[in-house]
Amino acid sequence: MKVKSSAKSSDRPEAARRRKQLNFAIRQSLRELSIQLSLLNHRVGAHLDLKDVDLACLDLVARQGPLSPTALARSAGLHPATMTGILDRLERGGWVARGRDPSDRRAVVVRVLRPRIAELMRLYSGMNTSMDEICAGYGETELKLLADFLHRTANAGRSATDKLAAE
Image (cartoon, rainbow, N blue to C red; front, top):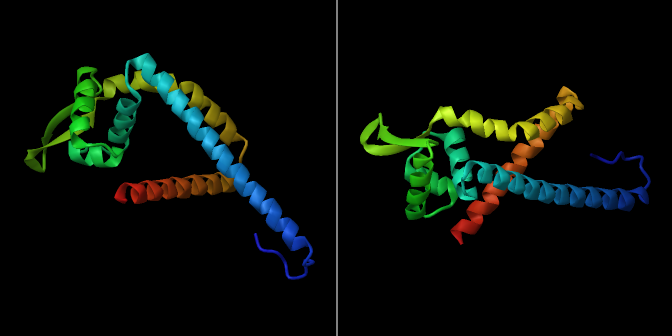
C-alpha cells in the first residue's frame, strides 16, 4: 500500500510500525497454522495406521503422481533407501501400487489406489467443511488475494527448503 504524497511525514513512521506488526502477526499465524495442520495430519495418520512421513508421501503421489520412487524421494526430501520402506508400508496398506512406467517399461512409477482415498477424505472432512465456511465469508477478489498469498508463501517455503538442502 503506497502512502499518498499528501500524507504527513510524521504518519510514515507509524505506518511502518503498523506494517511491521502486521507482518509479524502473519508470520505467527502461519506458524500456528503449520503446527495445527501437523497435529491434524498426525491424528489422521494415527486413525489410518500411517506414519506422518507415509501420509506426506501419499499426499505427494496423489497431487503429483504417478511418480518414480526417486522423484518421490526428491520431492519429499528423503533418501531413496528410506523411500523403499515407506512405499512398502503404503503398498501393504492398499494406498499405492508400484508398476511399470508406460513410457519406459524398465522404470517403475508409484500411483495412488483410489479406493482408500475416500476413507482419508472422510477424516479431513471436518477441516474441509471449516475451510468452506471460512471462505464463504470472503468475496471473490479477497479469495484471489488469499490464494495468491498462500501460493507465493508455499513457493517461498519450497525455495527456502531447497536452499537448505543444497548446503
